[in-house]
Length: 179
Image 1 (cartoon, one colour):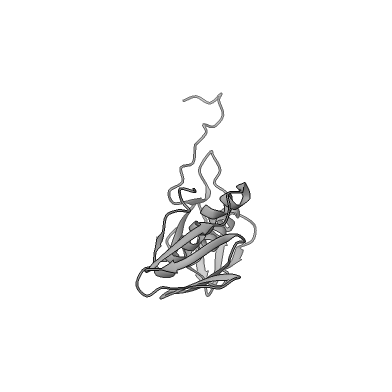
Image 2 (image 1 turned 60 degrees about the horizontal axis):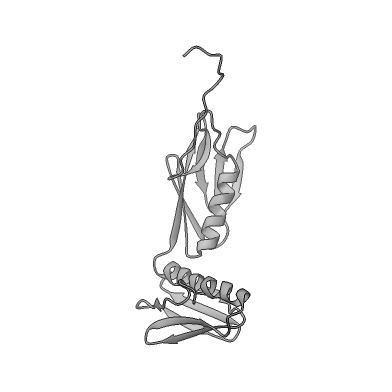
C-alpha cells in the first residue's frame, strides 16, 4: 500500500468535492479546481474525508495511487489557503514593475522584458521582491520558474532572479588576482 495514497484527506469547512467518472472537482472560498480521474483509482468522499484506493496491485496503478491523493490534497489546500512563491531580483539597475497583469522588468538587456501573467495568477512587487500567488500549485510553480529563467543568477556576483530561499554558490574571480 502506498504510504501517501492510504492517508485520508480531511475536507475543511466550506470545501465541496465532487467525484464524477471522468473528473474530480474541488470548490472552496478561493475558487474551483478540476483534475481528471485516473483509471483504476477509486476516489470516495465519506464522513468528511476523501479516501483514495486502487483496484489492483500492478506497478503502474500503484504509482498513480499516491499521485492522485497528492493532487487532490493540493487542490484542497489551494482552494482554502492558496500557494505562493517569492522571487528576488538582484543586480545594479535591475528593476521590476507591475503594469496591470504584466510584469515589466529591466534585467540588463537592451530592451525591457514583459511577462504576461496567466489567468488565475496574482503578482505583487515590493522593492526587489516578486510575490506570485494562486490556487493551482503547479501553475504557481511554473510561472515562478519561467520568471526565474528570464535571468538566472550568475555565480560570480549573484546578479539575476532567484527564489527567496535559494542559496547561490559563489565562485571567486580570477585566480591570479592578489587577495
